[in-house]
Image 1 (tube, rainbow, N blue to C red):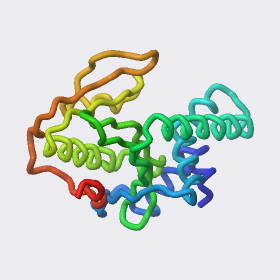
Image 2: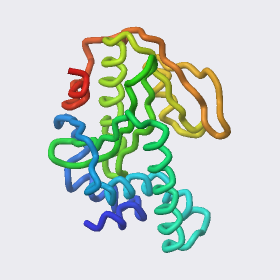
Image 3: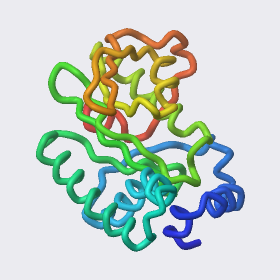
Image 4: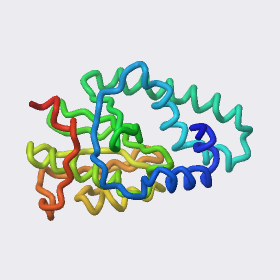
Length: 200
């Protein structure tokens, strides 16, 4: 199925979800470093998080695609400059690329820069499993965490459940921190292949 159609049509995303069976989220999760060959995929993931917003505002498709491509390039360059030692990873479920995870473990605080999944893979528990693994890894290393999240993003509920608390704001974004403490239910920790690779 055409990836652009999935970005533009929620029904297409649901159809793909059913046909691929991604509602069963027990396949192994893994991270691999993004390369230049992944730029189109990374742009599609970024666009998928904003396309509906632009389409709902009545923006023509071609104009929205052009604007999103430009915004992606600006964001990509910004992240690379401001997090020179950051990890820019592709999230994989089994053999499929399903999203992106940008994170930085250098310094005294783990910076969760960006996490996003393609539409067809949302709502299947993948993000929760991945976040639990990241939080558990940080807790094991006795490192606090911080992230920015939009105030209207429902994922804030998950972050609160994982121990993040609001500590500030920057425009439309809320700053959240998590102290260096273990998860309440360590037994439910999820293993993500590649998460600890650069720490060994």
